[in-house]
Image (cartoon, rainbow over all chains, first blue to last red; front, side):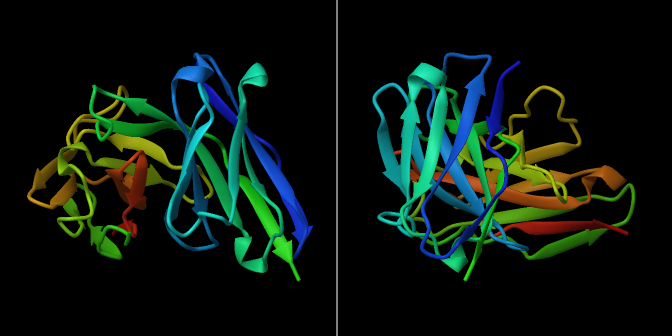
Length: 124
Length: 110
């Protein structure tokens, strides 16, 4: 069974650093991109960024460029999302998901499965 | 890029049909033929229900269907059931392996 298992909930203070993880299993981790998605309390899904584990090529959404860093460790089939200095506005649930593709076109793709989510709470 | 536009909420009675639209600026999205849809129940992670505009993964009932016209994709839920009460999000590819989600639609079953 293909699974993405995320690290547990975090409670941090503003200004602290944080790294959360997403471990893949049941498939070849290096061949499919991993995406990160933010969901603030009571709000919708926001696409943050994506990484290709095969060569660590990472892309970011305009609102997240320079705000977070996405990385990967293929030796343990794990992707990471990290902050160097958290803000209270980073309080949210963060999901990872596997990008699947249906053909040669990059647009021919979707996200499945998803991790269970990691709740990050940042206080002032 | 801006989020794709979805109605904030739609509702229908048990057994009825509802349709959720997903519209983007024509220049934002590389190809509207590959919109995907996700359902999210409260307290749960999103789940893929439609990809490539109208293809259903294994286990997704046929009463969930997708379509597309120009720069608008739509999700139709026929024969509404209690389990359909959830939030629904569309997603489209922008360019260079970046994507954008829709604003989300809450479906209420009356």
